[in-house]
Image (cartoon, rainbow, N blue to C red; front, side, top):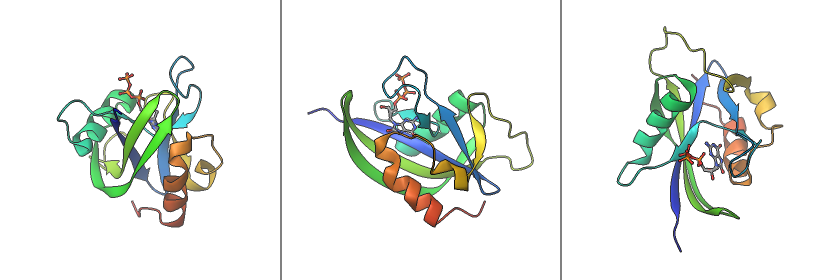
Length: 132
Ligand SMILES: Nc1nc2c([nH]c(=O)n2[C@H]2C[C@H](O)[C@@H](COP(=O)(O)OP(=O)(O)OP(=O)(O)O)O2)c(=O)[nH]1
């Protein structure tokens, strides 16, 4: 069965992370989400996450490290999810994300309605935040 590779960024700044909301007309519509998306053929997930963060939030990020990898079966397909800790590439530059993305306190993040596949990574980041 086909598996779709997805790369997702946990973008940190001063104890907060970037969170958006999925459109209503896509799978998992209306859920909270970290920036990310599907990997293009032959595209390494670390490159996907930088590209998707730029496309979705307007911000340039760099990968600080791998955080978690898991597989998850949704009704809309089977995914292999690669989660990366990321930081703003230019720490002195503008870090105002494009809506619906916004900076959210880590304490608040765990209460949001993220997709099922995020459950493990959410407890990981709350228990062990990146100092950025
Ligand atoms: N962006 C994002 N996607 C997530 C998260 N958690 C989670 O299970 N997903 C799932 C939802 C989707 O099935 C998949 C991401 O695919 P997508 O459809 O958003 O990707 P994309 O931006 O490349 O979309 P497309 O325009 O090519 O359709 O990963 C998350 O935190 N962020």
